[in-house]
Image (cartoon, rainbow, N blue to C red; front, top):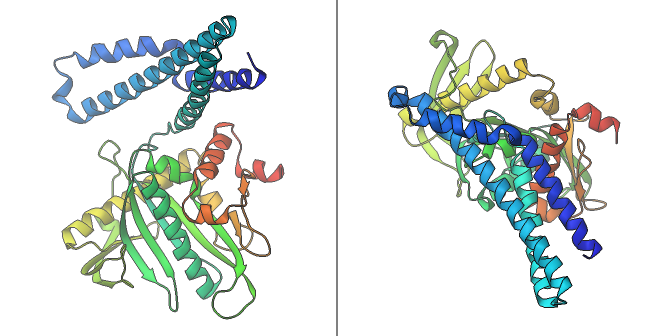
Amino acid sequence: MRAEIQTIVADIEKSLDLLAQRMNWETAEFRLEEFNARVEDPNLWDDPAAAQKLMRDRQSLVDAIDTYKGIRQDLDDSVELIELGEMEEDDEVVKDAEETLKALKEKAAQKELEALLDGETDPNDAFLEIKAGAGGTEACDWASMLARMYVRWAESRGFSVDLQEEQAGAEAGIKSATYQIKGHNAYGWLKSESGTHRLVRISPFGKGTRETSFAAVGAYPVIDDNIEIEVNPADIRIDTYRSSGAGGQHVNTTDSAVRITHEPTGIVVTSSEKSQHQNRDIAMKALKSRLYQLELDRRNAEVNALHEAKGDAGWGNQIRSYVMQPYQMVKDLRTNHETADTKGVLDGDLDGFMAATLAMKVAGKSRADAKSED
């Protein structure tokens, strides 16, 4: 077997090892038997919420087992074909099996990455907030570029994107925007994007000088009915107002916008859909999402570095730099993952950056650890 193919086989084996580790392969079949026994309980649906969670957990385990077994079987079959083809000097069989192995390597790597998304709310939809930071008009323009980047990324994955709120900049771009990104594992992917994003470029506003701009990104899980978040009505203030954006494909214009302020934490959320009732519902979900995120931070501050990473949208707190001048480079300061394809990144090609951050967190590194290795 050629050295290149041996390397591919080793890479697939490595992915299989991680998949087995993430699902605790040694007990997986036993746990599935337990799930199956509970599913047959005639009283299961007496508690619909618990039953739905059980069915989701069972299906997740079934999918993980099937994925592992499928990749393992395809790997064994391909290796056997290569060995047989080499023995019989059948180059066509060997070539076909090697092509199958190369495709299998890509599939295994993707499944390995998806296996890292095992947090309680990773499968959920996400609220994504983008706010202009230091830099004035330049920062507002940068915030709108980031909004476009994330919309492109989400749409490339087949996710739906709903604009919840947008505040236009005084001269260009946006001061802030909030989106709801709907799709499986939307929060799991986007949580790695929370933080300050820094842009260096020649100003497009007639200055002709090199400018540095900042924008803050925050991702929060949409909380479903399986997670209880209590909000005391006495702690919130609800305001209605007329909302109008700058227009365009992703901007709503309505007379029924709703703003909810949570007095104890100072959290403010807004929604500007077409009906006031819908706005209240969306805004409350957004508030619960933010409160849930705060609770996660308190419970597990070392693992969830969302607010540590986010910081103020200014110097010294950035998680990623996008340099357009004097050279082309996007670099994540937590993982050191980088690319010279700035256009591709700004068009939504973010998977490499997200994957590197997920892998870093699984390895147990904090942002400070990553920076100290730079």
